[in-house]
Length: 113
Length: 114
Image (cartoon, rainbow over all chains, first blue to last red; front, side):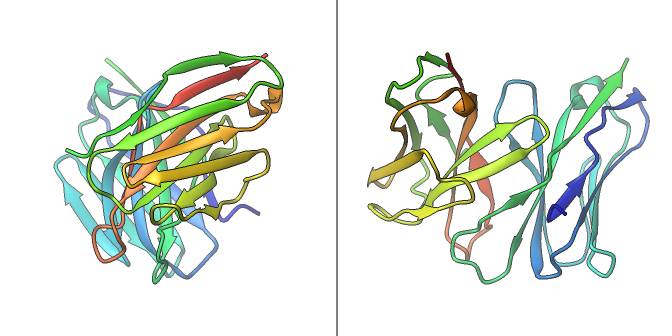
């Protein structure tokens, strides 16, 4: 079993839809949770970063962490064609010196006009 | 803005060649990382470095080595390239744990070994 599971998609939605992207994980020691966006043939770029449980909002994006269920989500409101990309979740342990991240395999999102 | 640059976007090499992939960051970050990304497997950590001349093996170090002679530069070396090393290689850097703990990625090098 992988430490971090993520549905590969693709997830196809019309413009304006609310998108929900999810990851589950098995290691309850994870404390830092991140979402990266990766456009085709580019490197991942950091979208959202949260520590421990709770919600964090940034514009159209909301990151949610439920540590009791070992489940994290990224919500995108009013999705745009420019949101079409692969979304990677990543997480790391507290108290590590080197921030070794464990990544999901990514969910490909397609937003059609 | 954090900037991580990689020496080549696309590279084609032959089996058995020695391959150097270079990464440079301009944010004075202590930590640097090399990953490879393959469909269905996600990002896998090859090596990382937390200081000049220091290196640690990641999850898949076999067939690779690294060099960090200067803080801003981290090189990945394929001693004798093989076809199963055809992949997207991504470099990343991050600041110390007491900071944001996030990693910033370069644009990637797509390596094809023939």
